[in-house]
Length: 457
Image (cartoon, rainbow, N blue to C red; front, side, top):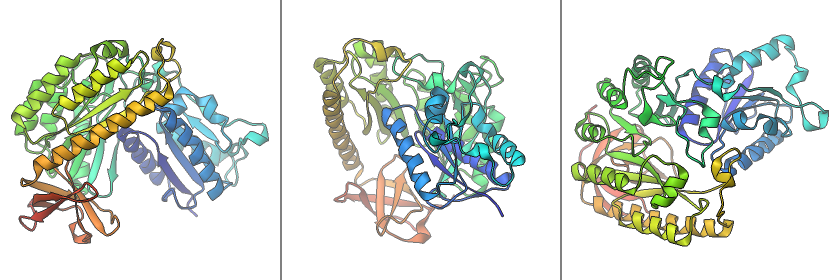
């Protein structure tokens, strides 16, 4: 009888992409993959370490697993597992902890345990009460210098394709270089092969993911030599047959070149949607963060996009409550964003992370002030999104419908990331249609009229 395995992913799209690849490895080894809500013999939790909340979520998920099946085997992989393996190993219910490189060999570790104890490996249960810790296999992060490609498919309409991993930047608040290692890239050939494989499955949209995808090309051949650039990558992907949409998930402003913006504007498949991290609208705080740009460069990028793609959607990452951020600094950020022609914000409340320079900086901001600032920017984000949606009313767009029935409605996204809704119709799933955006519903989503039955792809 096949052993059942379930997966839970915390954090970013890159984690989801890697979880899917690891899951396919389990299936090829004879395991049966089941939904996380179902009973399983084994649970794999792909962890995140970007925020304090992600750390807490891990312990909550392990408790859920123990309630569902106290005898299940639990493996922790990912960023948190690389940064703090002993801490995870000490959590009651965790049996195996695998770091940045080891996670891709998880089936090898599991098979070793099963071959030694095919019925019930005693090593599987290093519970807190047993006097044994979970097994830990975690390399020094300097050893994470090779690349493993991956992609995931969500709800049959969209795939997340990993093209790059790691980061060479030294932002003072960030643990990602400690958790994922140096910047390195998939080969162009492998990316194109994965894209073609995704297209063959009937997926309409690919989202490019990575830690710092604008750095694509670095480490493509196991060294720092750049044979290809990010621009080369997107030009090549634009020629892949069968993919109707390509979306850039997130790209640093200093790496988003004018040539890339110009290409996207005139490409076959790349959509007019950019997500560009800002983190602060204060040059003083940007310097404390060791970001590689100042406000003026960010303004230039936004203006360039809007000049040639007025309908483009621009999302922004911003951190509030960074050490040294005074009320004046925060208001500088608020007004900067308020005046900028952007579409929505992803707001992150700063949390201290061990082994980062920011954690020991002077001028710590109290938690209640951090939360207040976060609330203000989330309000600004809602206002920006509403204004962007209002500006799109009356325009004709193409929508890709998703696969979930949400309280009697089907949702979809236009090429420029306007979220629309219509009464549930399963025949619409994973289809593209030309629509005219007509009004904004009470829940903030956009209603529309069909222009034609279906877009030919």
